Length: 484
Image 1 (tube, rainbow, N blue to C red):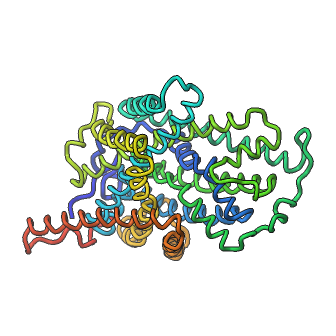
Image 2 (image 1 turned 180 degrees about the vertical axis):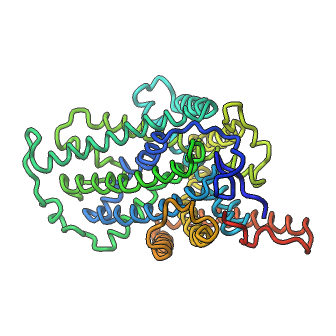
Image 3 (image 1 turned 30 degrees about the vertical axis):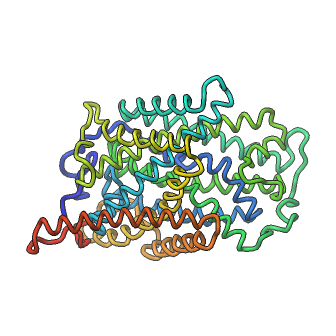
């Protein structure tokens, strides 16, 4: 197998010696910490959580605990590997080291495709909100403005991306904290014109589990993908002064607080309002703020969702550019994408990612219910495939790191290997649920097709490489690559 790429301040050895990647080290710890906190606080929470409440009732709290627990385990695994072997390609590099080039190629391109397709949803959603505020500018005009602004920001120094995300995440985290404070005051009847609500909404209307455990399970399926986005912090850590220390601190600070934000806000919502009043597509946060008399609650939440969408757009553009740069660095993408500016920004990788992002946006605006819907379905379950490869990679790499470079294990997975296997079983369970759910089944099947296509390309590349080397050469795809 060819050598794994070096990372910012690190080499593939995992021991910290060697040459630096050409990428800059412009991200500070505060950037990474807020990126970790704000990376998953988005429209999926502020608006999409209504669908989960509708199917699970108050049991949505348990659904978020289960889904959030799975996300925490995945992030702990990823944090362990990224702290020991930081790289701009993060889990793609880890998969390559653990399983061979085919795995790094597959997970890298699948994740890149996921980001640039979802980018179109975020740009379109933000444009719809902005168009409501300033209807004189058409929706496509707002999309163009957002794409240009964030392309320019990502083409400049990486600290610009960090600053954008820092303030976006700060606003989102502040909004969640204020919501929790106001909600708790309303629960205890401290706010003007409010009385203590007690447990009436939790025990009435069918009880805590109005649809039984089946409702909780359906709730997990509805909310698990809202935790996607945490992975970007491990990609970004490679562009900090001390990647190993930075990613460890970011992961530690993020996972518990995010679970608190999600579960805490859901508990406030179902305590204050009857779960049966929730409607999919309508923000339960707006319903709560309206209920406790906050003036202009709808517009306030529109602003928060708008910022959340722009934040996700910015993070996805950054993550996709760094992922395709890492693929090019390892010979899995065109070498022309390796061109880096004097400030350490992979500008061609940024332009390649935003170009496909523009294509996705145009498809979303022109054919939202046909061509783009198929593309969106094709990435619907990719996050679970990525998480699965992260878990398998950690199972393979942990023993090697312990044997060859134990000093780099500054962040360790809990109860290894048992919780890693538990996470894999949970992911398999979610995939089975998707297969049995009429609404989710098309996403799973299209995603499986996209994954199979990428795996087929990876297999053909491996076969061609093996033939070009001849029968006497050792295989680069046997999964026997060194971990450190």
